[in-house]
Length: 72
Image (tube, rainbow, N blue to C red):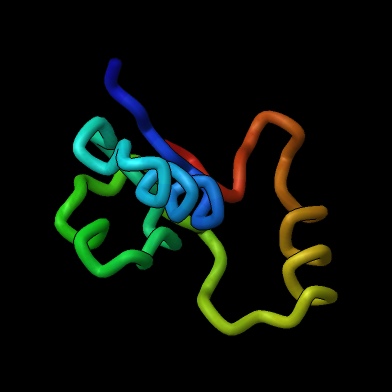
């Protein structure tokens, strides 16, 4: 089984369960545990880092319905 994990919390859980060797891709937000940084990036955010929740909401709302904040 190969796994692409796009949520940092899910990635941490997968490592805690001993499944880190099955992860073949992660989002750029997945940074823990440190060994995850050697995995290929499968998804990046279009939003700049450090935005407030309100700014994220506003930016995401301005995207067309067919666009994603996290394109593959």
